[in-house]
Image (cartoon, rainbow, N blue to C red; front, side, top):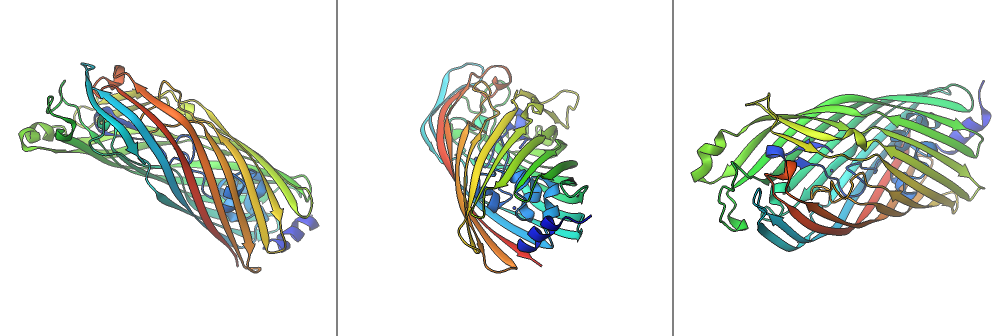
Length: 447
């Protein structure tokens, strides 16, 4: 039986990660806009509300990333989104010690902007097969990083350049079980690409043990890729014409990174270092996410929404790196001990007139990294979001969305003692503080 109010609303409304570095240094970092290495910029409309109600809003095709059941509310539609991420992250007082000896080695009083600027695109499309069935597809980058320190900074052995992109291609299907309840599912194909660099400690001493930092003789580079499959399932319950609830679960994806280590070094140690150049592998898991949200139209002008998301970072317990030359003996085992973390957000919309809509949102983003496990690859901390945006309906075919988020990150400290798995990297102490700006622009086109 057809649901008149659902069809009516349709007519009215025609969005740094896991990988590895050379000889046992781990890379886990983000674009610095979400805790851990999760990226949230798949919907510019959602950004304006700090992604509150992302699983229940279903305002355009971009919301399908958060809940595949959302595409049931769309006709033939495509959504394009792009987010510019500008991080102002500063490190202070970085002091390193020599591996094994614990003697002071290098000091950097200031380190400006180790997080690079980047533009993150995404696209999603939905097509209604009939009043009860819809299909959709999305391409996005839900995990990633870009961090860039000077090759000569005090923590060079813990990481210098880190670039990672993880792309998801998701094919979705949604089916309306009843007038009120829709379920959806999607198959996720995930691809990861990484380039990583760091300084190298070798054979129980530095290659040039008495040299100042600017005379380090070797740096490593690793490039690796991986691909695997996962899934997403979700439901959308439309309690009334004004109120709806959403819930979704995105599976973890177990990846196997395959890469190569190469070394840049001076002539005197070239022969020795050639023996270390080899293929390496590591298992990784992009975490599962469980999300629930609510959306409610108070009246013809005001709408409110809320969201809660749990990210299962605890699956990332350690990283084991194996080399090609001696696969029976890992090159490195790094304990991470990340914790599950929550993201909470609330938002509101104000419909100015038929063409213009204003959006507002607040959020709290919990870090999965404890004070005892923080590294310079991800000097992560709790974050607070302050978001706004607008929607402009140009005509029945085209709608423009713009969004802005200011993210304040609490100050954090890296305090690595140079023991255990860090024995060959040395100790490191550094303080970090920073804010992040997100600028988003999107377009929705109805065919």
